[in-house]
Image (cartoon, rainbow, N blue to C red; front, side):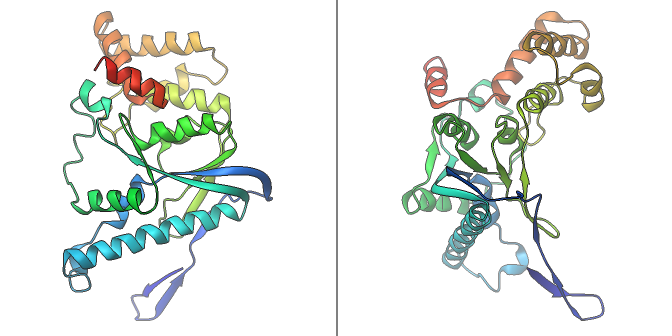
Length: 278
């Protein structure tokens, strides 16, 4: 619940709710997998107007730690209302992400580096037992953990990349905005395949992955369908890349392969193999 003054000076109370909640409690024993990277970034943000309340680095660090713990507890409380959670595992990005090596422009637009994020990362690893995703990203390790748990899990994340790779797994999007505290989502296998195919065409602006130039959602709705086989998906996506490169087949192959490597989420074993030849 949040409150603030309205234009006429009267305090307004806004109730923030979790959207699309499950209809009933699931007693299946599950592990809660949380991609915590976004939590660290939001917890470490201090706008200029907060300098009076948090005037120095020490006070900001303590407040950022409090925000982190508060958000994690909020996520766990909202998930445990509907699922039997026996364990909670936190994941944060590690070092040596292979994507930066094969594509120097990966997330290059994210130029602002918050000095508090590494401090928070050290805290969440050393004090809260978070696992660092060496060689890749937290997304990679979350997907790997889904497979290791045989799907008996719940995901807490805000990244669509994780959602697209996690069919039939309860997904709690903990991103709060306006009157929304969080939102439950679920996709099936057919939708998962279609969304990942579309992403290869559209790209991912948040990560700086361009996709097939000049093509977008409209092209995907016409040329990609949920009932396609893997071969049909690959064939049509490649046709799209040929169109985007104006008939340059070799360039189309190069861009298709690069974007596939950047957008695919990898297991820990796959990351180890990738790092051997990079």
